[in-house]
Length: 115
Image (cartoon, rainbow, N blue to C red; front, side):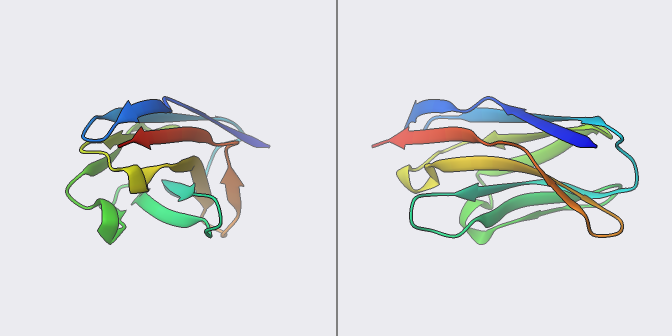
């Protein structure tokens, strides 16, 4: 079983920065991608940024140039969020997808950006 634990959310003013972290534990192998998704009230969960093992990152258009995803080993992924906007307010979820397409999710961390 795989567990994902996020940290780093909080309250920040518009224009500020936050760094989210996600650590995977358990039977972690055959990882295809790790990434971040978010969901705000009344909206569907959307992809923010993903990074393939040994590959390049992908970003949602709304965060390009402001957010950076990175991995420092096979089990940890970060999301550096700069120039935050009120529209970035959401619960951010860490995702791990295996090579066979199985998705694992963290419980989420709340990011609130005040105007």
